[in-house]
Image 1 (cartoon, rainbow, N blue to C red):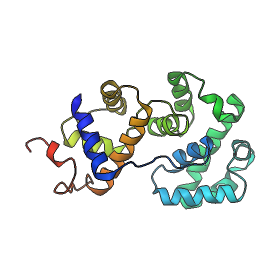
Image 2: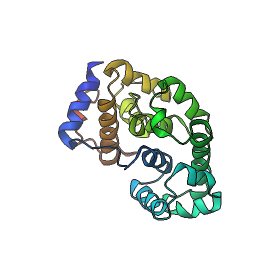
Image 3: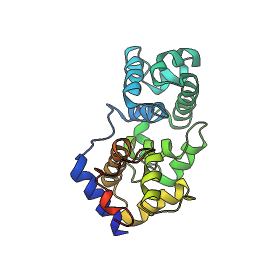
Length: 214
């Protein structure tokens, strides 16, 4: 679908490269992907900073730390009790099944690793794909609420579309390009936050010319 490439170029021209995802290590990016659920990134940064300060930004440490202590450390990220449980479940999986070696995860076939991640309680498709794409450099597209909003408003996909439908749309039409996937997803978030909000602000949106009827 050639229009997707036109959308990408229009977004890149307006916003420039986004440089996602910030993180010093693969594991830090994984933690960020879990903590960013339903919260702003600035809050995630505070939580990660606290984990780093107390020496908890390590799969073994999170695996060994009790959930209440972990919840206090990530409190700035919001929903901290739920997220502490999810973070513990993820660390338990990484430590017990993969010896806490994030690097070795990159050697596992993408589809198999994605299935494993989705079996972890609290890890849904968006979080799993964020971990795969941004932490482990796999060519898998991340879909979120902004993606759904842009695609449905532009009649690129029906309102009944599932996560997997939207993911497949990008992957079939853009090829398996990890750098393109990461940049495109970040640009969709940028346009979603600034223009394609719940109440659309179409007048100055870089995608306005692609709207049906325009």
